[in-house]
Image 1 (cartoon, rainbow, N blue to C red):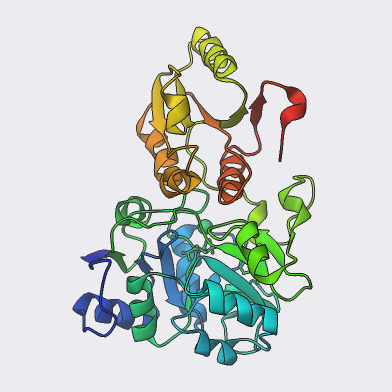
Image 2: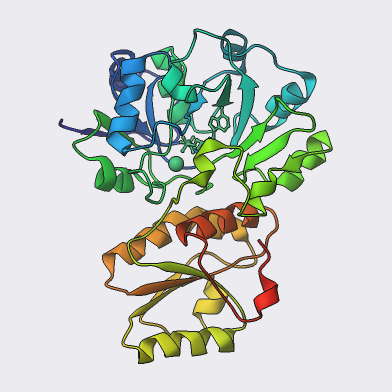
Length: 354
Ligand code: TXA
Ligand code: MG
């Protein structure tokens, strides 16, 4: 398959006729897969009502079929045709956070979606992305668009069209290049079918922000205790992983430098991924500065690009410094721990905070 690549200005005017958007929408209506930017990461879209179209997503990504997809819409008014009930809590969340990085789980209307979208569940995850290009494509397609992150399954999510091209060239019909994404980690997944609502995946909207708006919110216990089976099907897979083994670290700069030196004495090339404050103090074979500790949104923004950078370098081991578990730091730590396959290196053994 030849993959077309089209550029569209990020500030696309929704009412203006862009030929790239029209072509992409036509491809979607015809049952093809198209990658497009959202405010979180690039998505790989397909018509959520068509089995054949959705199968195309699973084929291109190599994604396990028991991992449901998020459905993207361009207007909250579409919800009534897609789900059974939107209660007042969900309404309040939609009014405040949509368009934005918050996916809400509802009971689905039967017979609307391809069964593959929901992996046979009676619920569906829906979000309205805050990105003019995504909204224009979805609206023009006139269909709900299923869209997981546009990476090969298991790899870090793409935050630029080049990442999508690297992973999926020849496997999908088209890529719309709208530049770098903003948030950098995926949407928060919140189950609205339970009371109080439960966070199934931490993401672009923090638990604190949701609580400020609707009061009580709980977090899936498996996110804090890795021995429990996650409620959200996709959360059990190793994800976001670079080629070299990655360890999450927690400890002082001095301990970290000694740990790196010990690996180097064993003949290993060591890569370090950390906020700039740490990078400035540590020596390793390959250093990747990922945002600042002061503003973790900058760390989230460049997290996946930073993890991908190690695949271009011949390092034997990657150490990734943990960040504080507050705000978007919870999503960053969730992704790092998954990229590490839960491998930690900790200075003080009782200090593991996940
Ligand atoms: O930011 C995002 O959400 C990105 C962009 C492209 O919009 N999309 C994304 O989709 O991350 P995906 O398919 O990679 O994430 C889907 C995850 C599943 O692995 C699962 O954890 C959760 O969303 N999910 C989807 N439907 C669900 C359902 N019915 N019940 C529980 N969890 C669900
Ligand atoms: Mg994904």
